[in-house]
Length: 243
Image (cartoon, rainbow, N blue to C red; front, side, top):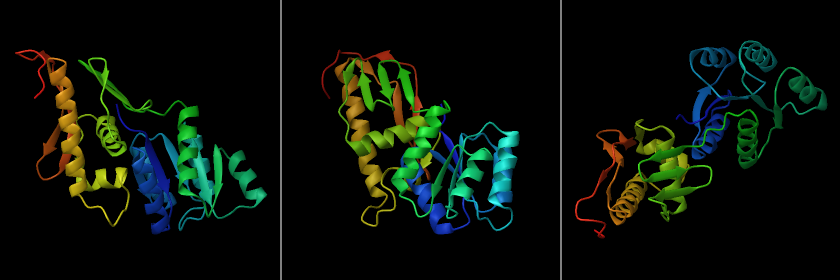
């Protein structure tokens, strides 16, 4: 199961990074494009779930990019633009956009609108796993092992949600840091290692108490970071004693 992929089309590097950061923190896979041509190429090149589109681009008018996308692809488009007149908003919606946000905007509101559009279009794929004794529900924010809920902190859950959203895919510490903590100058990549260590320990304890060998693992990928992996479950010899 892959994370929802959102293409952000914006020629202002600071705004592009800001939107990308907030979407990544929600577990979305962010694809960036700084021009209309790059946006159209990205839409043709890879599967996407939603497009966040600025209208004032250096090469093509955003309305033209919008028309080309909706003509060829069944993709919801959210316009984010400084062009906030009623006529501009009406033109964007009539041309096929699903929603329209005027700059300046609150990043939290933008993320909420992205989530709402993904939900309405049936493209919101919050990670859900059922592997042996483990049940992970990214939508309900629950982790259970053998029917018993495992208590996680918010950061632990968010790290697990990002990793479980793409099973087997390696994430760098920087990617996890951006997705969960954001650009916080007070936090470095060691926070990721500490969080993963706690998360591993909690999952291992839960499996051992259930008398099972873990059939999931957060694996270290040398030189990169971490990935979530699954394997076949097996009974744990000697019963379910605590470690």
